[in-house]
Every structure is written in C-alpha cells, then in structure tokens.
Amino acid sequence: MPEKQKLIEVKNLKQYFPVGGGNVVKAVDGVTFDIYKGETLGLVGESGCGKSTTGRTIIGLYKATGGEVLFNGINVHGKHSAKESKVLKRKMQMIFQDPYASLNPRMTVADIIAEGIDIHGLAKTKEERMQRVYELLETVGLNREHANRYPHEFSGGQRQRIGIARALAVEPEFIIADEPISALDVSIQAQVVNLMKKLQREKGLTYLFIAHDLSMVKYISDRIGVMYFGKMVELADAEELYRNPIHPYTKALLSAIPLPDPETERTRKRIIYDPSQHNYKEGEELEFREITPGHFVLCSEAEYKTYQSMYK
Image (cartoon, rainbow, N blue to C red):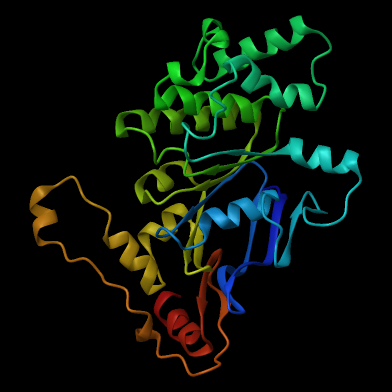
C-alpha cells in the first residue's frame, strides 16, 4: 500500500483575538493535524468551538498568532514573493457558509465565477473565458443560460453551486468547505454533498469539511477531528470515531444525533459532557496521544494509561 502524501500540515496552530483589558479569546489553541492528498478531513464541534477560525487561519484569511501551516511543504504564513503568494492562493480555495452573503449581488454569475480566472490570467481571450465559465456551470449542475443572471435570481442550493464553481475556476488542489450546507434545506444538502464527492473523484481534490451535522460529516469524511473550546480533542477514521469514541466530549456529541426510530428516541439517554469529570491537576500537561493506530485523543498521562487499557 503506497504511503499517503501529506498535503496540509497544521502544527501547534494558535489564533488569539484581543478583547480589551489585555485579555484574549483563544479561538484556536495549539491544534495539530495533517490532511492527506485526496482525502476529506471532517472538522466538527459546537458553534464557537473554533472550527471555522481554524479553516480561515489555514487558508490565510487570518494571520496565525502562533504555530504554522504547511501546504506542500510551504509555510502559508511565511514570507513569499508576489508570484509564490499568487500560486498559494490559487491552489487553496474556500467555499463559504452563506451562499447569500458570499456572492456579490452586483455581479453576474459569469463575472463571479471568472473573477479568479481573470486574476490568475487563466484565459487568453474573452471567448476562452466564457467557454470556461460555461464548462464550470455545467460541472456543478447548472447550465450556460445562468451565466448572465444575478445571484438574487437563484435558490440557496443553486447559489452554493455557483460558489463551488467559483472555487473550482482556478483549478485548486485543496478546498476548505466552511459549513457549506448549513444554510440549505435538508433536501438540498445531500445534493450539494454528493456533488462535492463527485468532483473530488473526478479532479483529485482534497477537502477540509467543516460542519456541525455529524451524520453528514460521517457520510463525506475519511477522517474526523472533534474540536472543543479551541482544542482538538479527538481525531480518527470516520468509521472508527463513530463506532468507538474515546473522549467524553465526542461521546456526548454522538449521543445527540437523532435516530430515525421514535421508540428508540423516546428511551435513549443523551450524554451530558462535564469538563470537570477529567479531574486534572492544576498546570497538568495535556497531550494529543495515539490510543490505537490512527486514533488520537487529547488527554493526561493518567487518562492515556486508562484509555490504552480499555481500548487495546
């Protein structure tokens, strides 16, 4: 079996925001993980846990407070020439959460999609530019007649498809999808996720898929990372994480997924996560440790020994 190639390396990433009086909010606090070429890494957690901030810091929308992000070995937050910076921006793209706010209402769909093509000089003539726009529209399940319309003329699902076409226009390797389906009707969510899976197969894309819908994350992801208050508390293969959650917070999250059986739902008990149950000593060092192959948990030395005895 060939060794997996690291496309993204996130090392001890920190993103702190000042809130006055010398205080800071530690939105992302020492997060470390890799994303391999061709895979989808799902990132889940409650609202405010830092998952979207992690995505925005990885792509460079926020300057990291500490740590580093490597894309194909290049430090995203390092100093680059204008040419290197342009290549990085082309190879890493983002699909935003709100398909209503992320499209300029004064631009036609053709101009929205072609913006990256224009910036990076990917079309030599106007005809080539429009041909590329038509191809991208068809790729995401729309048609060429949509090119001269404006965003307000489309439904939420169609607008998100336009957002996907815009991201694809510059032929990226890596796409961060920041809650791309949360603003859509449930009936449309599966269509958008299936489109993303299809594009990944056809174009060899790598995704960071950020969401709070655990069922959908399991469906699209190869591996899943769980975030809590700015820290990654667990990371494992998708199947392994659902079958064998280790961290108490992950167990609480999974217990909240509704089941399509009213009888089971009536009797099922939710797990409530209480951080004090860890009983950490003051100043105790927590580390991201491998409990079973490929399954990492943020824990103390004592918890590590307990988890190992339970799960090995």
